[in-house]
Amino acid sequence: MIIVPRKQGQLANRLFHLSKIYAFCLKYNIPLIYPPFYEYKKLFMLKTSKNKATLLTGNFLVYKVIQIIYRILIKIKFYSSHFHQIIKLGDFTSKYKIDSPDFIKTTESKLFVFLDGWGIDSGNLHISYKQKITELLEPITYHLISAENIINTLRSKTNIIIGIHIRRGDYKTFENGRFYYEFQDYYRIILECVKQFDEKSIYFIITSNENCEKKFPIDKELNLHFSHENEYIDSIILSLCDYIIGPPSTFTLWASYFSNVPLQMIKNKSQKITMSGFQTYEESHQ
Image 1 (cartoon, one colour):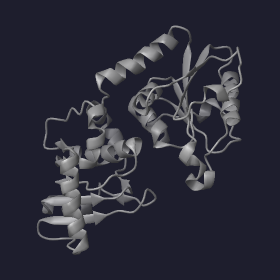
Image 2 (cartoon, one colour; image 1 turned 180 degrees about the horizontal axis):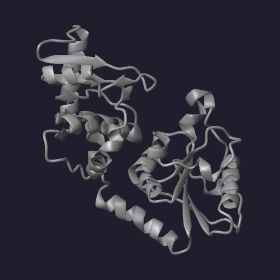
Image 3 (cartoon, one colour; image 1 turned 90 degrees about the vertical axis):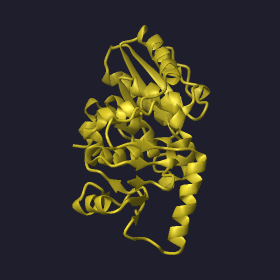
């Protein structure tokens, strides 16, 4: 049994973290206890497969109890026994290979394996088991219908829908502001998209945690729709678009992964938008 004792990032980070571990558990029929997901479990259908790879998320109480047990084990430096093993990982730059003989042997020989950290490398297991993962993490009906209604309204007006994710806020300091862009940078990107798609009718749907509707110049030639939904519905909206554009973020990456939508990450403010720059999640991880 694998136990994840601590939270790893926000929603999209946790979705990828869960997916990679759950894919491993599916392959080797190992139960997974993932209490840090209790905050988000009400947002998903959580249809588990009919095998030993049961996913248990619990609730806040379960999360706190496991945290206390884990902290005690760490404090007394009781990292290993005949029954348990603690594996502490680094940040996202470290790549601990869970689909490896050593880790497989550990999960087979120990009753409880605490897996703590973000730096997991599952290879392409989360791609191989994508169907089961997307069944598990299918959004609840209410949020899905809300997103579909918005997209269907735009579909009646256009040939192509491009999701633009604007993330500023924490990106002003993240990696020294490397991926923090001004609104005029996003406006330039939108204009470049129009050129790339020639005369085809395009609707851009803007998702952001900022109210950015008044930040863009009035341009009657552009079809812009500004989402005012929460982050959960915005994630679904992006997954229903034909293309996605945004700075490097697991938020857009998850939408691309979940629905196989071509994504173009903006890695610098002078980057040119090209058709070849759009890749599905699978294409970018070959």
